[in-house]
Image (cartoon, rainbow, N blue to C red; front, side):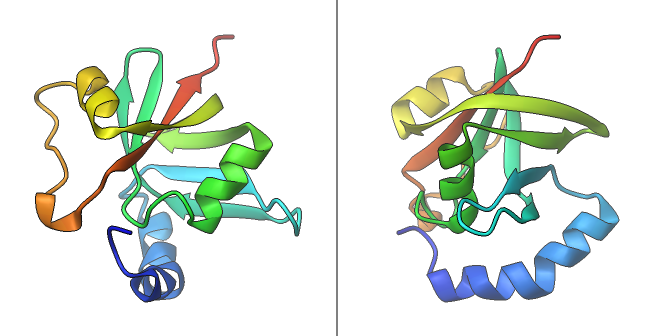
Length: 124
């Protein structure tokens, strides 16, 4: 696991609400797989052809990742607009970096991120 889960709990309660309030990060709106509650999670998302790529800083076992995978869809607020996303799937480093624009900074090796979430943007 890249980052310790306890740090994710601190982020969830302390930093995430501020990031959502300030609209400084892309925000994923998703539904809890057990509770049915709606959650909003700031994420590190990047536009790629046909959708978005998300760095999984805390790995694929994070609640929000499991929620999106279970539901098969979510809503992403990205650069001031809301986009419906579907077909969530985990991809590895090679596949992620192949679709990511070369101008976009890769995650620091120190974070040991090996899993990414690929989301397709719906076309209306």
